[in-house]
Amino acid sequence: MPQTPAPKGASPLRHGGAVAGGGADPVAGAARLSIAPMMDWTDRHCRFFHRLMSRESLLYTEMVTAPALVRGRALHLLAFSPQEHPVALQLGGSDPKELAEAAKLGAEAGYDEINLNVGCPSDRVQSGTFGAVLMRSPDLVAECCAAMIAAVDVPVTVKCRIGVDDQEPREVLPDFLARVSGAGVTRFAIHARKAWLQGLSPKENRDIPPLDYELVYDMKAQFEHLHLSLNGGVATLEEAEAHLARGMDGVMIGRAGYHQPWDILGAADARIFGAQAPLADPVEAAEAMLAYIAEHVAAGGRLGQISKHMLGLFAGQPGARLWRRVLSEGAHKPGAGVALVQEALDAVRGARESAEAARREGISHA
Image 1 (cartoon, rainbow, N blue to C red):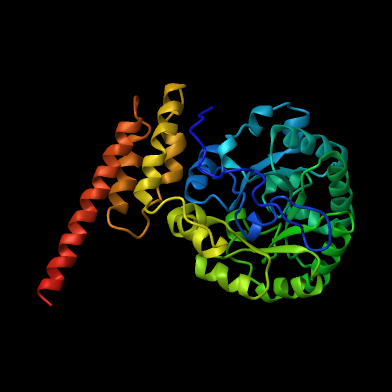
Image 2: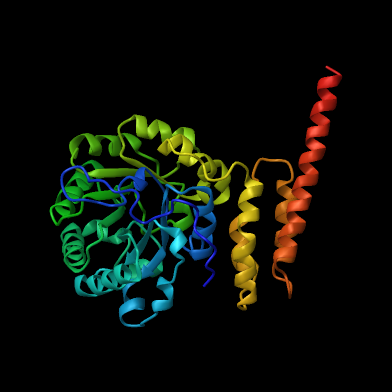
């Protein structure tokens, strides 16, 4: 496990605060901006990389199923670096006893929050009777959450949709929030789309069902005592700021945070949290990963396991294409490591110098 020194000030408890309506939630402040749990994307290497750019934002694991932990004893799925704090474990499941045991394992591993997935629409998740299909069973969700809360001392939260299939969201969502919060959950992240469990793929479910931000705003007005984060379709920090200005407690960003990490996380601490940004430039973010990469490769890992999460670092900037090409073409070759990342960085620096020279020449001829 790479143990690159944590950014100065990194601590799982530095976001202490109280959730509206009750108990202490030590990471509620971090939930003002979070990066959504995304399968195959937000693994431990991705989270380590993201944490270098933002000390403040809340990070989530990929979904880990409770059966994998409890029955399969796949405890390696809980591994993470201490530098990732504050970090939440997202669980999938629908058996209260099993979820309670999985939550306990997560808390013992050091996670700052346990989140229940009530939003994933994939077929394999439905077959396990968890994910978005649980929007139809709010009492079961409440029972699961109550069992988890009883088993751990860290916050238990829920990520959900506004409804599924032919449900009427303005009827379903307030009832869902009331029942589940009645079990003790005080923080929810709401994906402002329905999930269609039949007829749409998981990818289509992220884009085709229309967004209903107004409904989520209304839920915040109706449930003032709950901490509610809005998720779905948020592509920029400007959009996140607009949702916060409408009264949301937090905003959860998904794909944009992954594909444009510097644009989102590099500016998040200053703009969303009023804190000093830990890095001034995406080049610094790449350089800060070198020791972590070196240790990972020396331990037998592959560069591509890390570099795939870094491809969007220079999105929209000079050298972005060269950066992606060098890493994409070389990361999976035998022996690939720090030298390849430095080669990609040199390509970015060269592109930046060329762009600056062209800009100055344009000014001189203006």
